[in-house]
Length: 399
Image (cartoon, rainbow, N blue to C red; front, side, top):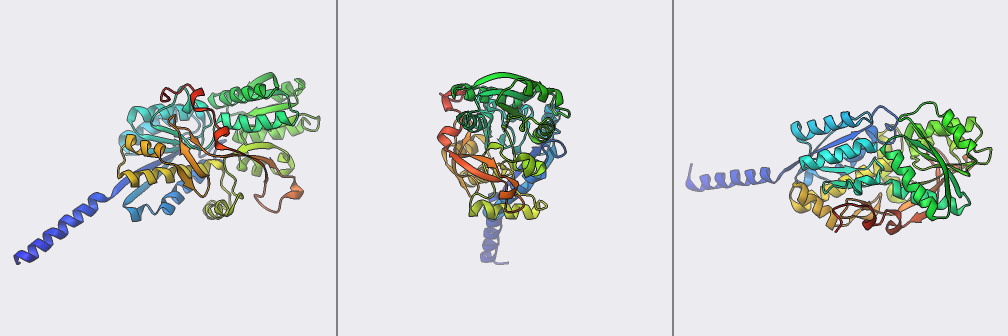
């Protein structure tokens, strides 16, 4: 073999090594409820959403090899914490996605900070994630209890619903949603006449609904979610609460909940969401792709948030050519997000992703044009109004 051949061979080997070194391996863990009350709004749909983000970003073509794993935290902080530690310590997970159930999310956020990884939350609601328990390693993407309370609470008080009674899930999310909505109601000129808390997850809500009915409040605020909300609304119908003149305010209603309830039971509910599949051509096209992989089911805002957050993370990895959490999250905060589902947004220093929110009303059965055609849009809540002011949360990252 001549010298020229050896040089060419050497150059090829070096080039090949360089190409190999340019590859970045990223491991994403989707941690959520896959078998309980929140499985429909998150569950396997969130895994599908993450995969769609990887595909749309064309990660492999850009030298980013993405592996996605998933697990069921069963809405229990201890189980979620054990999975997170195993993922970070033994399985090389770089980012944990989704995590509905605020008590689990707050635990995961703390572990993520300890392990210096990244948590992009789409499923939980507690404002504490970007408030007193904020973390430089956690980004709260889709919604929170302030945005829900502001949208639905303000709208209903303006409509004359100025006395409220809360039926609240007895854990971190329910407490935060009741607290934040109560503040909104009072600022809007309304009054909170009482509250009752039910076990999470719940089954029989009859005694709690009877207390709400007896309060004579114009609005009964449901500070719960998923299967609990569905069962509460069904049982409220049995007691004739809405027929008796009281209004049910579903403070966290997902598209999957309305689908489970049916329009006959859900019609007239006013709710706040970050995303609806039928908003524009972009949301419709993506949602159709999602549905073909998820048994015909349209995505919830949690699924959309997993997609959007994953996409912004991958953009950061490409731009920084790094997986270092400090480098990546810095880029994510300094550069605006943009995608077909949420449009334009930004990540604040406290980790709160801000974007427009939307006020919807559930259609009457006669007004629906077909499956999954459930909402009328009442208003756009601008990003600047939708989320808690940066200086009001008590986050120590805010100077």
